[in-house]
Length: 459
Image 1 (tube, rainbow, N blue to C red):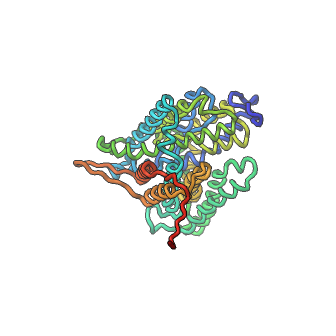
Image 2 (cartoon, rainbow, N blue to C red; image 1 turned 30 degrees about the horizontal axis):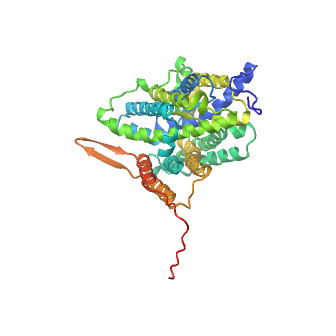
Image 3 (cartoon, one colour; image 1 turned 90 degrees about the vertical axis):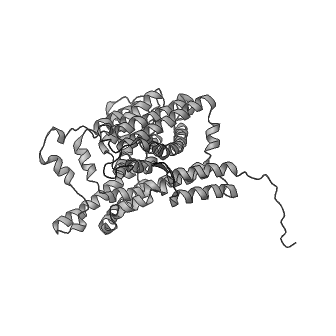
């Protein structure tokens, strides 16, 4: 047991009340980020919450209850998810394309896990070194910047919807999140996104109250209709309701010819999140004083994460990933108990069936989510920069500058490759193109091992 841990991985809190409090803390830490993904992509929120709990339980079982990790919806796949939903029929969302995409992600994880079990990790580090992965992570975050700003301004649907009251509400969420994270004490510091969402929602509620009082539509930021509809005729479903699981959706928009494009949407990003997975487990290993890459082993953690993503895809459409927020909870609370994680996962599953909470979530205006996303998406981009700094990537190297430059400009600029064959075709996303270009450029450019030369241009 690491000296500064209060509870080690195998230990359980003596009092049930303590275990419940510790579990709730993990739920609060992951909740806002978890629901933000379906809110931004139009996927079912209640099913996403259930999938987070189920995915976490699968991971815990796969890793033999030796890794205190909580899995929830991944932001890295938002762009591929939105693109997959829009494939084919422009009226009906292509739900099956997303399910297949998540199955592909799970398959990639399993393949990488099996290769690592056989050959180790050197090949992966060589294919995707920090100079490639860092800028790609930055691209993933920055490519979503327009979505965050459009939600903040209320212009996601139309530029004519620009509204200053929405912007103010969203910015309150932004500043409240940042201030809580930097200056918050104890629990406040652990749940800055919860504080941010609540603050932005409160501001929006004040505007909405004045808007209704003075019959001024522009100030009516929040639409309370989901709550009104839920309790207009009180039934059993008003309190407990089956979530809108993905496997029960309409799959008529899917066409088998879309499969190559789906593969190219999801497979490249999965290689990036594999690297994030390794980094998260290295970080958690340092916190709990155990090498999780050795025991239970990277093969088990990857299979647990990847298959959980495939399961989550069939439940809600979102990918699962290790949550830094929950790792932070362990780091600050010094509670590494897997039994606490298991209880949190079970409580999360039950929460998805509780309709009143889901109705309140549905009333959260997009501008508040957009305000929090300014930080969330920027955090993803900053994580890429953090990786470059932590790995001490040398930017005095012309090669490294060129590799990073091509990835950033191609990715943020939206460079895509459309390939047409017969009546069909595929489009490679800008993130995938950026990563491929980075890998190729990093491979063909070799650092010259030369001594410093005295170039006297005057001669």
